[in-house]
View 1 (tube, rainbow, N blue to C red):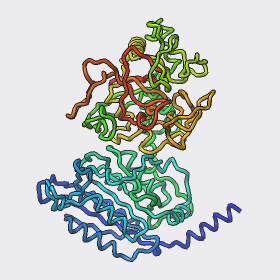
View 2: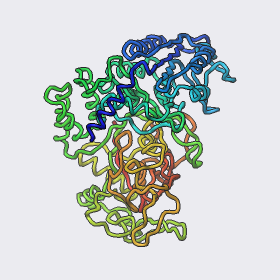
View 3: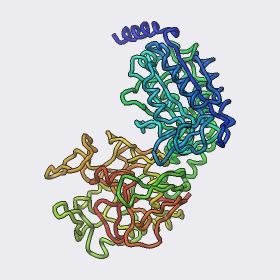
Length: 598
């Protein structure tokens, strides 16, 4: 029955000849400007290379609008708005020019050839909103907007925060099946941009990756789908692109089909495609910097691989290390720290640049803290002062000390069984965390510390993307989430959370084992939820000026902790939220993770 159904699909797909579909591509290029904007001398050649691939190998009807003025853009879009499109036709609109984010209006603009350098009326610029409005009403079912311009990532208001799955990691389908599926899907209004709310290089990496993707043809079956294209662009580009559906409910695919493509079966992989897959896996391993990642590369590519010697050297370094530390390299960058619509201490939003640094993959566990205590004889603040740790009393709305509670106890105040020593340690003060860092530094010869508040927010918010939560901007779902207030019930009395993430159940009321949910873009687990985490900084007010590697005030009363915990709601779970406590105080919801300078 299954084989008959497949045959039926192939017969139907065969009834989709190329002449039943027309693919259009329109390129708007502004490289030389009338009013003082820097020339973009590479842009015409970059666009021509993409256009040549589309026209020669994919059969697109291509139009290039060089030296595009604002009038040229509106006139050309108007022409394509009146075309008689068929149900399978597709339209690509590609813009290569300067871009602006006007912070006063919080709107994005493209700068045509005749755009003024400073335009208080915006009449000489072309707004993202106008582009979206015109494009939304196009009578073509499938439209893809590509923006190769600074600050272009703010074009879409419905951003997709899921990282794309590259073609080489996806299940293979016959090209005809994929084509049939694409044209039976929803209407398409997609966007793919050269970066987020950031400047992008004048020499476009984005355009080069478009050419590479079109040359490779996706998985080699003659059909390059949107997420395959995205896999190429996202895999090697910095800054990261932005993408999504700029009109809700228009999640259909956009496909590039080679003239001689859409074969009945997947052809043999070319050397170029194989090398691309290998380079991608090596870059992934070298970004994770874990023994397992290097071992996976060796298993899949050695002997004979390009990076086999390097992989062996990396694994040898791990084997010679007394304590592999699961530290992830966080590549530095610039981001907007803080929030305009949150708490007062999250303001003002200010530009911060952080250098490369390392941050531990997981929060420090009970087992790891136990090793420290047993090796050093250390006594925590909760033990030394005899007052124990802080618990929140929801009846009195106050934090109260429970004597006798220390790092050996769980969040309910019960002595932990050893089976839960893979949970993050809690009831530890800032002083205790610093003592652990000092002991581990002496033991390993590496200098461990707590992250600065700026480093923590940058890493938790996925770098310059600066997402709302560490898992992204949307609501948590399944493993793409964290241990937060949810639909679960408290053990014993079945109590529920008053404020919670509706419809989500993370499986735990108190702490969860480390790594129970998906990692963020940097490979870090539990940056949102499970436990709040001590940072190195004293609590203080933000500066309004741009800063590089800020370390906070030189003195204060309280130390900062970040990230939300097992009992935190939406407001507290935001990566911009700032919590704090005195350095000698332990809490049933606060732990820590390690950092090292690069």
